[in-house]
Amino acid sequence: MSSRIAVVPGSFDPPTQGHLDVIRRAARLFDELHVLIVHNPDKEAMLPIAQRLELLEESVREAGIEGSVVVGSWSVGLLVDYAEEVGASVLVKGIRSQGDVTYETPMAVVNNHLSGIETVFLLADPANSVVSSSLVRQVASLGGDVTPYVPAPVARYLAAAGPSDF
Image (cartoon, rainbow, N blue to C red; front, side):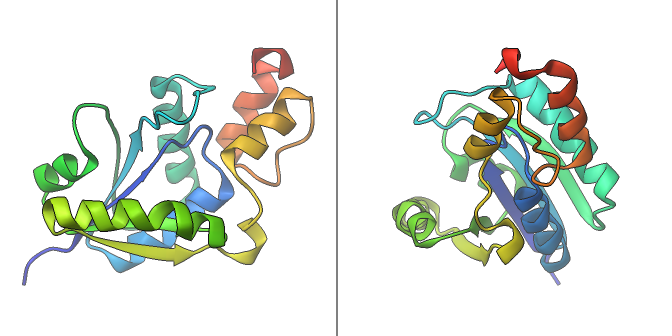
C-alpha cells in the first residue's frame, strides 16, 4: 500500500489556533503531512519566514500533534512542484467562510490542471472560524490580547515583541 502524503500550505503570519486545528485534523487523515510556509504575493508579511518556521515548529510540537508532520517553507516555483517533489497527492486547505471557498476554488482547479493534485477543504471549527492571521496582526499591533487566538509560542513571541514591532 502506498503512503498518502499531503501538503498544508499557508503564509502562517502568524500561526493561529485555526491553523493548528487544520494541521491536527489533517495529520490524522494522512500518513505524512507537510506544513509549508509559502509566500503570498497578495500579502505583506509581518514576520520573516525564519521566525514563522520557528513559531510553527514550536506550536506543532507543543500541541502534541501526532503523526508524521514536516514543517518547512517553499519559495521557488509552484506549490505543485513542491508537492510533486515530496510525493504528495493532496493539498489541504482550511475553510472558514464562503469567502475562503471563493478564493481557494480557482487555485484548486488550476493546481489540479497543472499536476493532477487534488485539494481537500477542511471546514474550520466554529470556535476558529472568525480568526485570521491578519486579524491577529491587527489586534496585536494595537496592544490587544491575542492569546485566545494563537498557540502559546506565538502568544509568548508577540507579547515579548510588543505592539510597536508590528
